[in-house]
Length: 405
Image 1: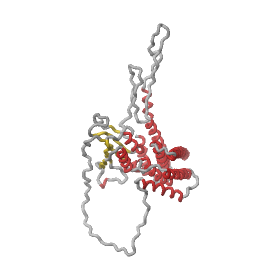
Image 2 (image 1 turned 180 degrees about the vertical axis):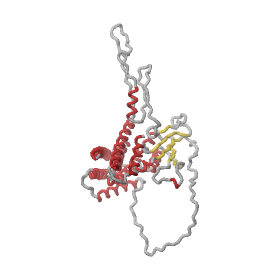
Image 3 (image 1 turned 45 degrees about the horizontal axis):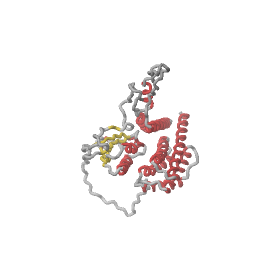
């Protein structure tokens, strides 16, 4: 088992090197004035991937610094922070610290704590500039020497857990609107993510399209206080956005939590932006669990056109099933000859059956494979402990079930 663990750690550190190279390319592009959305997303994704893998292996120093780095990049990704030369310089400095922390995790020299603290303070300043909240410094409670407690009159009252109307019966918007409903899994909070970040991202999308967002907290799943588990996720949110917001912008907000958050997007009220009837509610294919994998069978067309097959966003096994069920391409003997003055027969070109798959679907599949490898490593690491690992083992198994759904 130790050998397998070493191999998995080696794969993780190789991935860290690749992500650091991607981070360096992105920050160099930002330094040259190329502040496109794809560049910023690539930089954010690199730090996020390193943090997620380090958390699975218990590399606390690396996780803490990467979390602050990721939070500062989130302000850049959402547009709250502009990539000025000073800020990009701070990110480059943080990248060097992150690289040294990765080397330290591999058994290299320890990174100077003062250098880490200095870079972290600079990143927290960027977070504050973007309207975020940096971790507050711990303050000790000071009790004056002459303090005298004063008794208070207290009359016990019956607790009222009637939360009132949270808008669960809210009427559909009178004007056309894009409605987003999402329910975070407990695993999303375990990873350090927060529903607040998603709400901020949706609000930024609404402002970018000349409108505002309306948020409703749905607490129907909240149990009685005696049955409530403090680490369980119960709440969901309903966000109404302007009709001009494209669904692709909403997908971008949930891109980082697609495996641990159920999201439904629909258009309600009035007509859609194209002037037609309101679009029926359609769950996001990559974010909502399907009851069972579906297969598609290509049927022959009378014309010589390539069959238009819609890919199913499940896994590579589904694609293999699709390919297995496709009929073989027509042979040369089956092609219809065209006579041309009794000279030579001209055969019709053979059409090849193909499947079009979006690139982001392939990226999601690769990310899922990486998460599964990390989860396997975490389970093996827990299994090597002699005692005290049962609860953590249960949590990791639940996380793996989420990945394989």
